[in-house]
Image (cartoon, rainbow, N blue to C red):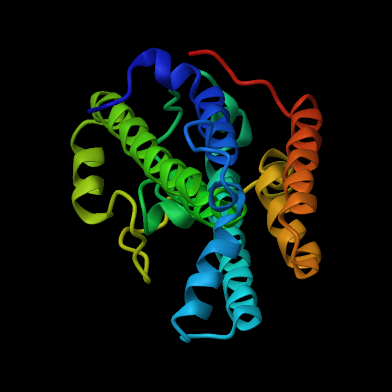
Length: 241
């Protein structure tokens, strides 16, 4: 079930493709239901069953989306600060050192976890079928990527890494550190620049989401992505093993 080398090499393009499919849902008919965002669809269901007033449901879903994207950005920035933005951006697997600092003391894959949380948050703006498709396929992709990395790291670091895997969960983070800190210092500024897209999207939702219109928010996502691509040009280039 692990990702192939080709999948790993082009993982950013695969993520982009899955997001595009989620937002466009080309398999769905152009009915009014298919055209509605998940935001409106779920709020309508709550209202029809009298669980919540429509506007209250809209507010609740927006707050949840903001929380998910903020958490996603938090894990992405935290993880990237320790692993290094050049390694995150690299098309190949790297193993300069075995990480046991920051979020890696609580979860083995904070970056993939952050991506999944981000996906759940922005799925609010997708059609319902697109949201389900995107969450499921992004989750499967994160698992496949993690499973591809683990044999590589086990071969490089041997028994210490296998012991680390026994103590630290693959995705679901522990509330407390599970392994001693290794002493790696974080590079916060570089990490913020490298993960700018995730941070920007969280702020786009938090600031402009209260206009309650999915279309301007979708444009905000595109602008966040474009700004991030520009910033990546100024980040350190990945090293080759």
